[in-house]
Length: 259
Length: 259
Image (cartoon, rainbow over all chains, first blue to last red; front, side, top):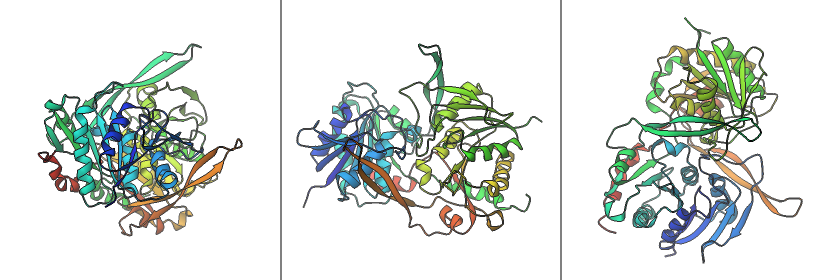
């Protein structure tokens, strides 16, 4: 049987240590092709580039592995990988990351890492976004690797299901302190933002986004609970944003005789 | 009783005709403040700006209405509006749009218009994204206006519900041909992309995103069905991306004795 074809991407850029860790693991399971941004793209969400052209350049950061860097967003990278680099060859698995920093809970909607994975899942490709709860460039990805491999193997063995992707977050812990893995729901949290005000060298005002994460969802079935208790969190996620319970309660809006 | 405070934003930029139509309607219902991008931001999804500072400038495109333009994304605009422009005064309603072009179905995840609205809903602000199925600069927003007003009035009168936003799409039809309004679910569709290849003036290759919308979800409870049948579609949407039905089927992944 031929080896599975695994597409690797990220949002921290092709030189980030996290993508190297993911390539290391993916190489043990299949044929790997990397298409990743040429610069950091954190916080880009599901952005796509429509008003300007994209660049794509073959590079060689991972010996023996086909790799390309692009000027686009993480979502653009998945589109370029599918249509240009792989010329519509079937991709068995797309993995995105390993992100430097959490993408648990509400972070999923801001995350380039997870948006790239979602784009692949829309294209009917099994898809996983991985993140380590350590923002530093020197983060230690070694404890994460066996877990990343376990989850990738599980997904490759599983029959494909439309639109399903996994949002995997890994606590910053030594290997022997990781408690295991939990299938979770997305905690209902948010950021309490602060806009830091300043003056540039010419005296003009600027505003710079800052903030603190606030979780008020205390369920023990959430990703935040799992991470705070030493577990790896796995949230099955999807692209259908419909708020089904609200449909019935809005039916009154269909009554438009009164305007 | 004091008039409601209504925040208006968009992703086509503060000079787009669609935002003017939305301001016209909002003025009849409350006190209006506009904070919108200074340039087109279509396709920006839920992007936020974290690696550079934001600019914010008072402008006067709508006589008598406080308006600001920002260098940031639509989501950045909502954050600037809340924290800088309105200094955390309670906002009763955030409306985003009227977008030039559809944000129905899967377009919601790429849409700056809807991401701005979702950002407001995360901040516990009632929130609506409006889009007209007409990409042209000269689109006629007049037939949409009474419907936009009806929906805004309905939401202002409704008790606030956490995390709820409406994705409203309006067909490109004369007023007397709009059939009414339907509460829908998001159709499960996608884009069939094409990367247009070219050479720039210096001979270097580029790739430019293009594509066609493909809907294979034929349910008559979807937004696409409503729009194709002359109705305005209203999809209650939310920020929880958990794929709840998949949780049980992934429990096997928690068994990690085998690695």
